[in-house]
Length: 358
Ligand SMILES: [Zn+2]
Ligand SMILES: [Zn+2]
View 1 (spheres, helix red, strand yellow):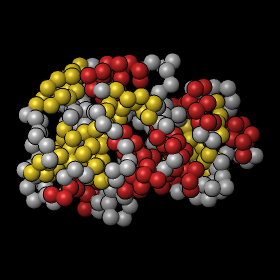
View 2 (tube, protein in one colour):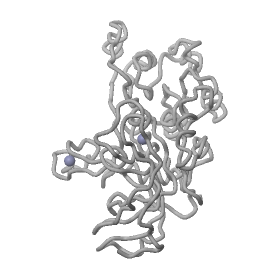
View 3 (cartoon, helix red, strand yellow):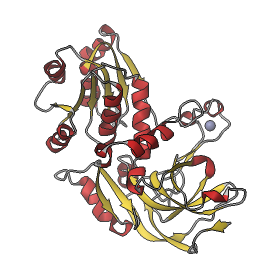
View 4 (spheres, protein in one colour):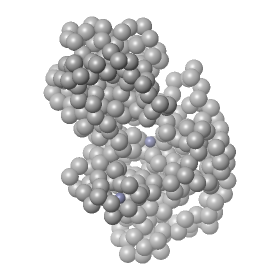
């Protein structure tokens, strides 16, 4: 192993020992194997999927270090790894595919049937260091702050959804959901739908106010019927492409109601419970002849690389993407970080753990 710095034997980390039992403690610093680097993690976003993982459902085994949205600096390289990587900044595609199943053979890693995953199936980014295969590295320039680069994972997921939606010029687009993914989808869709309108639909007044500040049209669905809102804004019946980024019964029904005839609905939100549709809503899928598509994770292959595109967009992107990071905490303030996310009265989008320099 070649390293830039003296690697400490122990590191600070947040370890999940059981449901609701996340401890800030010292763990062994991983040692990069052949083909791996040691990443000093500088920023790691808290994903909305981390909340049920930590507080409700747990993960595949305990103890596990959560966190899959991270960026950092390469401080050591294992055997056979190009030493010029030392000191470089990088994000990490968090999936470790089996490379044997049918999906893997066509590089559709997100559909792998036997994968591992940083931050859920194996240790992840709520730590000072992580050993990562070179294959998973998504390097970025020294000019991009680590925090912004840590948005690469949700950005890649959002870009993937926009690609699946096939958003094109002059399309009217409705996004249901005002979380980080909803805002990222709206931003990327706006770049593709020049000439059309992008509408963010939700219930939280402060998030809709923020969406308006970014220049999006908004529909407050606790005050206005979604179809009526789209008519008011676009003058037409329904949006050409609708993204559902909530995962609730109501939001899925709304996304179907929001779609124009022959439109497309892209389902992105993780379901919070079993789902059921009213007969009339289901019927409108048939009558409007909608295309309903699922979107899962991101593409990271030689044909489509959402990660490469996402990091380019973050490097060249406007302040609207950077403004999605509303709070940063050090890992020893984890409780405060999670309390902030759970406090509905606060305006939160992406909450992140950061380690020292930007
Ligand atoms: Zn995530
Ligand atoms: Zn596989």
